[in-house]
Image (tube, rainbow, N blue to C red; front, side, top):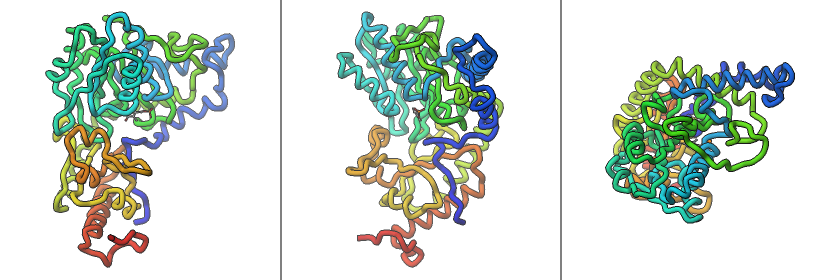
Amino acid sequence: MNQRIYLDHNATTPVDPRVLEAMLPYFSTHFGNAASATHGLGCDAAGASEVARLQVAGLINAESKDIIFTSGATESANLAITGAARHRREHGRHLVTVATEHRACLEACEQLAAEGWELTVVGVDRHGQVAIKDIETSLRADTVLISCMFANNEIGTLHDIAGIGRLAKERQILLHVDGAQALGKEPIDVLAQGIDLLSLSAHKLYGPKGVGALYVRRRDPRVRLVPLMHGGGHERGLRPGTLNVPGIVGFGQACAIAREEMATEQSRLGGLKERLWRALQRIPGVIRLGHPEQCLAGTLNVVFTGINAQRLLVETPMVAASLGAACTSVTPKPSHVLRAIGLAWRQAEGAVRLSLGRWTTADEVDQAAAALTAGVERQRGLHPAAGSENAPRPT
Ligand SMILES: *Cc1c(COP(=O)(O)O)cnc(C)c1O
């Protein structure tokens, strides 16, 4: 029972052994610089990067030329939002985003607001979903960009990206989508869904940390960006610097695997999540957050009413999960996502995010549910004798 059960896949995932295996030769035998195509080693590296570009593009119905490799979704989102806004500054200075976006997107927008752009942050309903009509109402003649995530990292809620894409097209406004949580979990089709810019990350998809991509549409319309960094002209001049070839190879392999396994894995995870929820539902006062249907298959965010989730997770070390409410060391405060869905601080304090992944088993789900149930009961003083010796005493 001492084995740790990892239910924090929305924070990061372990590298799939098949991904690691694909990467290893690019640290040693094939160590070349993809920009040094005057000899075999450089050509090997360049060729491997192009295969990976095809693999990433294939998972989102793009072409390989549309893919710019970056260090991750944070960098991609900053390049997309800042780069597009700066390029279109003569067209207008208004940006639209959504209250539950990842910090990478929100803060890139806020930085532009500090530099003179105007920003509208559209709210969400109690399930965390944005209404298309609310986005529509926020649009102005000078709006140049809408930024909306595909799937929320904290509560798993999916937005109607195709609907937002249609609206953006009608108004000739660019649409940036943060696809970090959705890639390989939900079908993404940049053409059908009207996505102009899409930020992606490898480490949420059983690939390595520190590598990601930005999809940049090349026609209908051709999207132009002002780069954030300068030097070398790599990646269509949008992201200079020597390519992280092993990381890129791993990202490509992770996408190829996800493409094969996504459909079966989605239904398997959905089944496991419902199994976990059925078990946790027996705890009095438990509430499920996020959209009941339009939600990532493996994400379950629950509130244990009256419980301090931080204490619960400390006292249940067997379960590796995240707090629903992000806490800083000094002042705990509810996450902006939980605030946006209207959760009071007292409730947000009891929120736990359980995110399942490729190697999660039914047995693990049952054990985690039992451990969390025991932890809640201990904290409620129902079984004080069963408490861990190290647990802080209630005051
Ligand atoms: C993890 C995550 C990011 C950041 O990705 P990195 O590759 O770690 O920079 C951005 N958006 C969402 C929704 C995420 O889950």
